[in-house]
Image 1 (tube, rainbow, N blue to C red):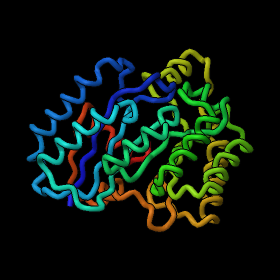
Image 2: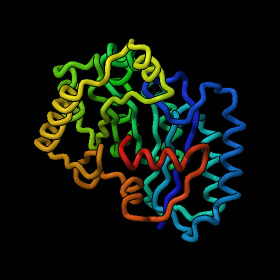
Image 3: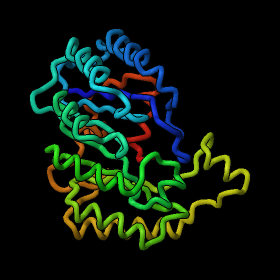
Length: 275
């Protein structure tokens, strides 16, 4: 078996903490999709294994591509590989892009696992991080995903932010538990070079992350999720039994994979290392 990671390097706006490769110039999407398809053509022989059991669309924001763009990439993959029946097809998306029609389109492309970038249910956190969605949209998107029939769902949360009190963090974690979300990825806010937060920190407009607070929130996360039946199987990932991410787990197991799209290999390594 093997897997393919596809990096979609577009975002509506720059999150202030993110140093991944992305562009907010959305008019280049068609050209980028064509380049990714060409990348697949040129590099498919990197994988001697022709059967795929995972396909992962990451970013950036894959949900900024329409169905036609996504279908072009998936069709090109099918030109060179056999995608196993029941293979895990993960798609990262943002709450503000989720509509019933878009979810129907994803299902028509055999996408069967969604990774939703919530980060927080509180507008104070989201505005500080410069996220494009609101807390209300976060809740609504989760409801729409469930109504569309997706049961393999992963949600992202960020702890340690100066705006996130312990009480807010506890609410965020408990909300996902109460909603029955089977997979949770939780990351400590970091201040990276070449980001807005990085510049603010150098200008002394932003303090360093409070390690004691971050540690306290992390240990609350561990206890709450363990008590709710989740288990930690990666540095930042927690799952109910049977909902572990096959694609990410394959990285650790040495399963062959191909990264396509700009900076795809670097971003895969960061994802594996939980940063």
